[in-house]
Image 1 (cartoon, rainbow, N blue to C red):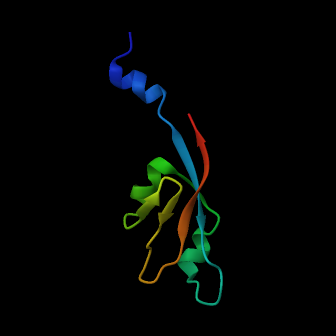
Image 2: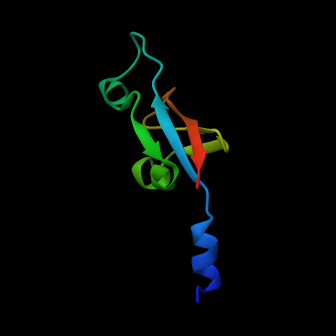
Length: 78
């Protein structure tokens, strides 16, 4: 029989995000490297420790001062 925690974990939603860089002459090499990268929602805080969540569809990455990059929700599944 499943414990409550295991049962709840079976039905947790998964979120997939895309890293979106504003690509212009001000974009740094690091942000260009990550542009269009797919990120699992569970990995955001580990990969981007300074990211701030705006709402469930958008995170501001904050890789460096004046960073304009974001993670945009692509898909929700379970």
